[in-house]
Length: 275
Image (cartoon, rainbow, N blue to C red; front, side, top):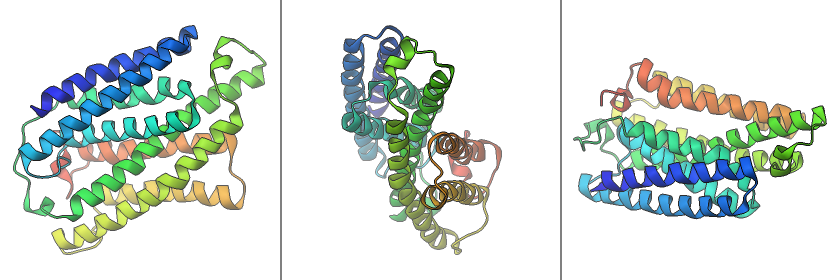
């Protein structure tokens, strides 16, 4: 049953993304409004599917790649809708919604069978650890989208080409503020997520830190965002530099999530393509 909800949510995410892209291409406000309502509906359906899977599986469904992709997509959509509701910037939907759609689409090509979870995952720390990390990563996904918009807008301003696209893009200061807010909320979630993962690792494998590929790349990602936060607070890293680092940081998140899972076997191999 949960898979049917997921497939329906995928369709809603696709339609919502296309409506936002239509808005940015043709300046039709109604398209953005319908896109928002479509994504809200899709997010609700997606969440219902998540709840169904929870009861069907008997555990929090974030234990393999299919479930992780689905939950990451749901988290991105949830965070995007919060940001869109606060700042009323429709244009972000044209960049953030497709990211959530791609992840949920990716999950459609992976086995959705509910599997027995290995003993290492049978811990109350697992849902806490993974939920915190994915919420933090979802915030950074929105920061990634905002960073791209920032660079596009800055390029237009430098060229002094005040074309139709510029009318849709928010001021640079607003984009930089959103980037800062994302860092402010995302970094603590990432930090606590890594700490809770370390506690879980001690229960599961008898060691707080094993330099497993996933752990190592999580630390690299944390250091990137720590450097960005430190730079913002001490030497004024803002604007273009902050936008570029937000994009690089999300690249590190993607590699930590997918690249490590698919290319670097380790203690976290249960989340690989084959599982």
